[in-house]
Length: 213
Image (cartoon, rainbow, N blue to C red; front, side):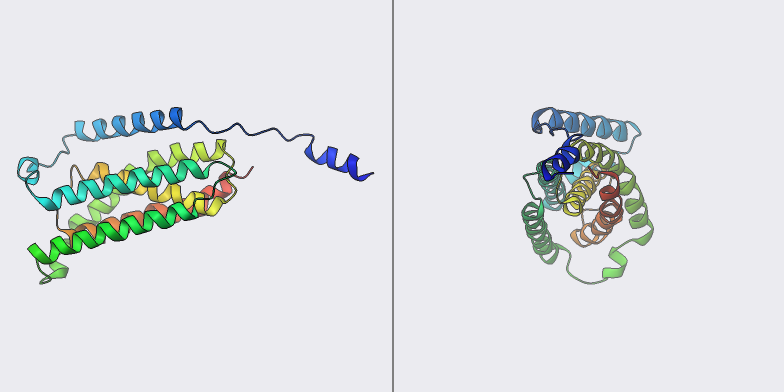
C-alpha cells in the first residue's frame, strides 16, 4: 500500500469537530445551577440565621470566594474542550485566585476569631455532613461538564478533567454555602478543601477514560 493510500485509509473515518459555542453551553449551565439551587432551597435548607449572616464580612467572603472560584473554573473547563486550548494556564490562575481568597480569609480569621481551639472549631460532626452534601451537589455539574467534554475535543484530557473537577466542586460548595451555618474561615477552608478533593480526584481519574476521541 502506498503512503498516500495509507493516509487516506487512516483519515477516511475522521470527522471535523465543530467549533465550540460558549453561549449555549453557558445558558445550559446557568439554568442547571438555578434549578439545583432552587431545588436545594425548596427542601428548607436555607440557613435560619441568614438575616444576621448578611451583616458579617466572613459570610460575604465565603459566598464571593466560592462564586469566583466556580465561575473561573467553569470558564477554564469550557475553554479546555477546544483542541487548540490548554487548561493548565487557566488552572494556575484558578489556584492563584484560591490562594488569594484563602489569604483574605486568614486575615479575617486573625482579626476576629484568633487561633485558639482549632480542633473544636472544626466541628467534626457538622463538617462531615457538609463534606457529604457538597459532594452530592457537585455531581450534576460534573455530569453536565463531562458530557460537554465528551462532545468536545480536548487534547489535554487530564488537565481538562481536573478543571471540570474544581469547577464542579466550587459550584457544589457555593450552593451548599446557602445552608452552611458556619462562616469561620478556618472551618470553611478545611472542610471545603476536602470537598474539592473528594470530587476533583475521582473526576480527574475517570473523565479521561470516558472522553477519548
